[in-house]
Amino acid sequence: MKVLTVFLFISLIVTLFSCNSNNTDSDQNSYLGKASELLPWISSDAMREAKMENHPYVFFVDTTHEFSYGFKAKVKDLKNKSAKKITVSCDGYLYQVPSKVQLVIDIKNDGNNIFWQSQSFDKNIKEASTWGNVQLSVDLPKEINSNTEILVYVWSPSHEVGLFDNLKVKFE
Image 1: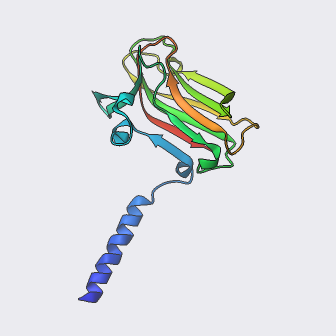
Image 2: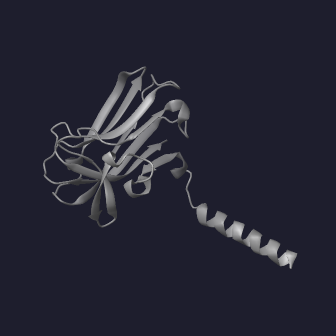
Image 3: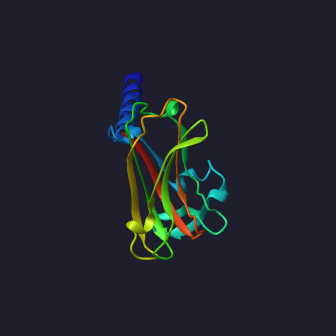
């Protein structure tokens, strides 16, 4: 009986491990912010219920929220501390096109900006009220050190409404 119990226990452990080991090496250097999975972790002010297919909850910018929820980490805390490049992407949704809503990479040393670049949502989203992928990829500046902060967020300089989900930050 003990042998059968041990065998079943080992089989369960192997099954659980195999189901959870489908990450690729590149995904191990990525961070994913999916609104519906972060509900218990962040302020409800950072997201809203959308009830859209594949996006029950979303992050947003609007007339009172010029800057969105986002990613913020110091280089020393990254999974890949020797990264030379950052690629960020998200699913974006616009209520009007053209739009000034932008995905932003912002890099700071001691609070001072050393790099800033953005990608307008409407570069890839050509039609209002549809979801589209927004992506931005840049080489990291040489001036970074272990205390450099890397921020990724969505910005609406004209206070337009924009939604996003599945924010992915990948260091290569």
